[in-house]
Length: 420
Image 1 (cartoon, rainbow, N blue to C red):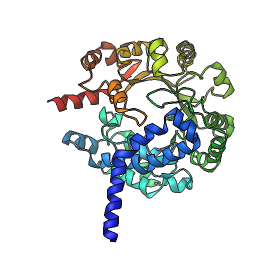
Image 2: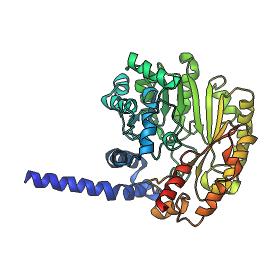
Image 3: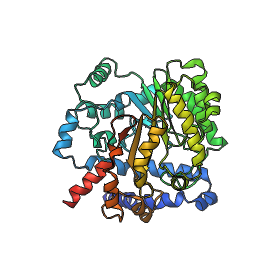
Image 4: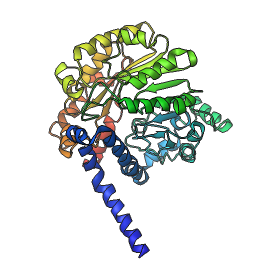
């Protein structure tokens, strides 16, 4: 009887894992459903589903991914420093040593003791997978560094330094943090979410406790912190408060790296948050060069306001008050024709680089929505035109702004292999 029950439970879990999560998550992000049930309950249930089901699916993909000989040889001769230097927080309460899409194995929960979290058994196993050259916890397709073959060589000075430091002091706290635990944002871009999200007062208090209990101790030895990979640092009250705290004098060695849609990063915010002399890098996620397209892909944004703020940031970069400025685009059917113009936009506003990454399947998309947006599919009616756009001379630039194609060409390469 016990054996039958166990088998049934295993089959049930497998059924739920394969069929239920995406449908449920699409229901949970529907605005009317959220209004009916309550955003807090939806957020808690969504985190549970993501941590219980979707996470296991992403890990399974990594375990079962086919590694061709060229990729295997490449990984054995190259190195990634992220698991040795970086900690990333997430809205679901888990911590990672890289982007959870690229490396979907968490090292623990954010409510853990900071030192024990950073040196957990899972963290050690991941680091060993880099040292042995297997990269077995990484998604070799989604990771742009693997897909574009841009990892440093294992014998490079950078890699040797990280390896030697790890051997001498494996318990050393992270040098770099990526804070993505608050989803609050002033926009609701369709490639990211279905509706506007701002943390309420209860959630805000919870985030403030996290700052004192976990974030500040983890930042004790950090040289840089990136805010944010989940929302917008200026659209989040929590992150604005944290930036003020970090710039208040207690972390003189720390430099900020900001990922923002640029709508709220103006001269006033620069002054009020005491950002002068503290910003190492700014990435502006833009996704369009025309106002009409911008209104769709950056829902809630004002293109004229964006250009005004880009002009301000361009002045800061030219004066050396920002060390690096990057513009990014999520490539999709609505904007791929604007890729060459996007490079010119970077030139206009003194960007050091422009980065392109393919739109990916998210749980907020229906199958039809993703098929319509995913220009990397050879069966897409505009795919051949997309290939022609990729031949544009602007996309081959090496000088500023340098063009980073990210994983876009990897999708094209795989499509060609499949067709052959």
